Amino acid sequence: MTPTFSAGQRWLPRTFAAIALLALGACAPLEKQSPEYQAGRARVALPAGTWEDLGRSNEVIPLLPAGFEDNQIPLQTRAVGLRGAQKELLAVLLVQTNRTNYPREQVRWSAGCPLEMEVTVVDATKGSRVRADCLRVKHWLAGTKWLEKDQPGLAKWLGSHQIALAQPYTYVGYRYTTEGGALVVVDALVDHRLLRPKPRDNQEFLRSDQPAQWWSRELAQAARVSAGMMDGYLAIPPFPVPQTP
Image (cartoon, rainbow, N blue to C red; front, side, top):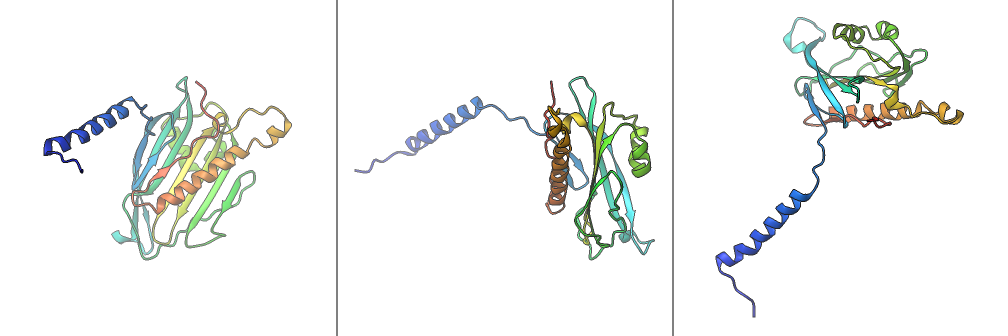
């Protein structure tokens, strides 16, 4: 015979089940949330670590013909820094993207993807004049002389904020634009200790740039995907070498 329950009896098993689930949830370890910062329309999710906000700024790119408000693209840049165990600065990351959603009918971007000695350059658009997908990696930097020549805006920003990486570092720059007006630019300065495991022999030394190459490609893919996301979600990939306590 099928058992029957009163309204109060039917409620009791569900209540006990709910209490049991809450108890299990309370016992489960909480996962540490990745820090997030807003950069224009993008949600920038950072890998685990002690990150700090280094400020944001608004910019406008004028388009041709000039003189019309609609012929401007409003942008925002967010800067963040990663601190090490001794409070030293291990990485600086700047993300620039649209302040608002697009699309536009057509935008022709003028910046190309120039080749340069001792810089790894990947132009996925094969020289397109209407969009950009440009990845540039300078593997060995100590000081700002190359930055002042190649990235004067970034070098000036670092100087104005009195920011310097004490150890040799790698520069990774990625620029992605579309005909519809989307733009994502990422500039990263990363301490070698996060990108290069200590080599144990000559073979490992010869392959020491591979982790940085992998990380830069993952960063470019994340930025590429971000441009197509409704909330601009941009997940910065974890660094190949974990931070030492």
